[in-house]
Length: 272
Image (cartoon, rainbow, N blue to C red; front, side, top):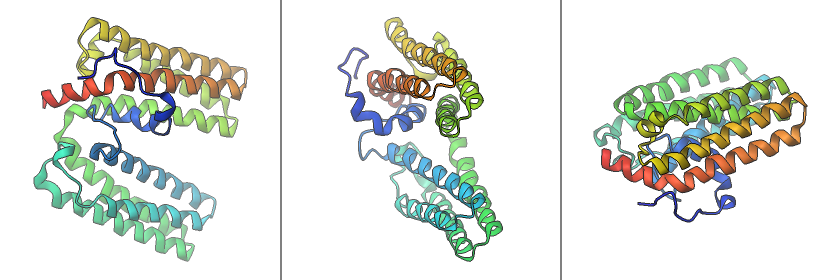
């Protein structure tokens, strides 16, 4: 087991996966080394979500070429996930056939989106997106997430944090400082909840008082930097917003993951 006092890996080497790692620790504390199946699952799900967002934005902009690119990502991901190792993901191996059916539904919806984009039919593109969400995303989550309730709280909190960070970046791009300030307050509030001892112990299985103190410190950093982001937003200072957001991720999220991820992974394995 890797304790919180172990040497930290380089923050720079983790930069490319920092945002996915925020969600990753919520999904059962799995390792995120290259090739790890749980990492692949999380990464692909986020690629799918990004592709859906890209498609919907492209429809509004009448950019059907970009819709086609998003559809291609969805099709490629459906193929790459076929035959995934269920045991490594702590999923019911008997449901492999069901998982493949949801992937087939994703591929079918992506093909419909691609065809509609070729015809320049925005309404049909949106119908294809609805088909994807209903018959693949929601249906799959309903079957597989329902059997693993222990993941839900971490997913809720970490997904909310990730969403708020993404919204801050969107606010910078759009000069929407009200959006930045609102999301910074959301991050600060969520981070404060995650400093509570009972949350740290029950959600992340960190029980040692010294470990809890260090773990809590990372979320206090997250909160303090979020306050800096909000302050920068009131001054309409995008560089300050960007700097505080970077520190929030590197000094809060990434360092916490470097110190605790492996230990949490081992505790989750023992519990399961």
